[in-house]
Length: 254
Image (cartoon, rainbow, N blue to C red):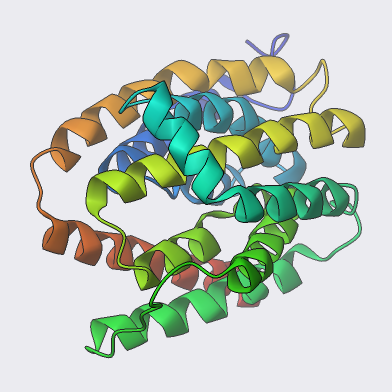
């Protein structure tokens, strides 16, 4: 086992596989947060660079599966509807991925975690932040933020979910749109980190090894998601976001 993954012991590999199952399960329920779960868990025992490499293939495949759950036609409509977000976010992601060894991880974690926590707490307290409809300008700004963060950390879910939640997107549509946006970002991330050197011969097999448990967890989570209504889905999404944001702040400060 050491010969396959020199940066892991059999025990830590087992932990990594279990983390991938849990990350997939959370994604299956609410449609996002798998990268947050995986990178948060893996960085407790391996270097952030290896953790980032590990989530790339599972994220790409899982998001593609999620985006196509309602068919190719529905996915294509989502691509057209959110083309500004995808284009701007993809450019920002590719650019920021080249800075992965420069920007302090703690700074990035605070930049993600604090706004997410503020947004969620406001929503949970009953103050609903709504957008009347899509705006190309707003979409470009949020897409740029999500892409910039995603290139550095592999995590671009929170800004995307905040935007879709503010639009009051129905559950099935939100799951599909998240899949489309995240699969586009994951594809850009894959290419960007082939260029940055994060994904290489040493780390690609590890990323591939995390794929089956992540998909299994996603299947289990999907069975749960199919049984919950819009109100519970929205609240579950906000709670997952809150924990994700709090964990990022915790890691940045402690």
